[in-house]
Length: 154
Image (cartoon, rainbow, N blue to C red; front, side, top):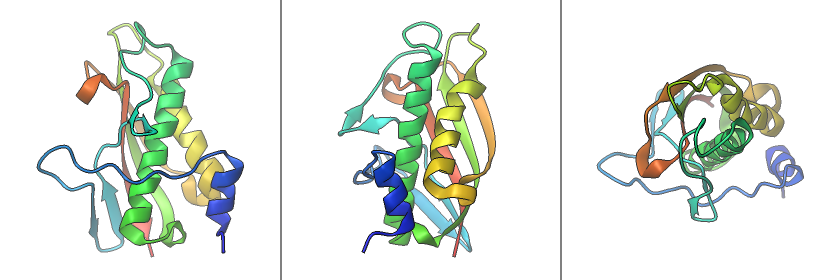
């Protein structure tokens, strides 16, 4: 039986992928008490990066928003792997959005909206969160965006 979250994801045209395996000596998530913390998630879609490059040079804000959305999709994939079902998510507490960008790019907050808007659309009020959006010089594999999350769970 499909859950409410599954139905919302379907309406959004999103099928959660298998979560990405760690690329080095770390784990994809850690649960401590009622908090689940994910490692940084890249904008992987269909098994590969869906965009590459710096915002403000190779990519514009709209492409960055889409990349941020796919990072958030992968955050939820990790949460489902950790919890068994997304209904155990009580709240997305905070996301940190790292945006690989040129020094003069100042729309990191708009890029981050791609993730924030998706999380609220998928989870409703449970998806509302605190957030930081940070410009960085580069990210692994030339990814344009990386997101980590702190999630309260039941």
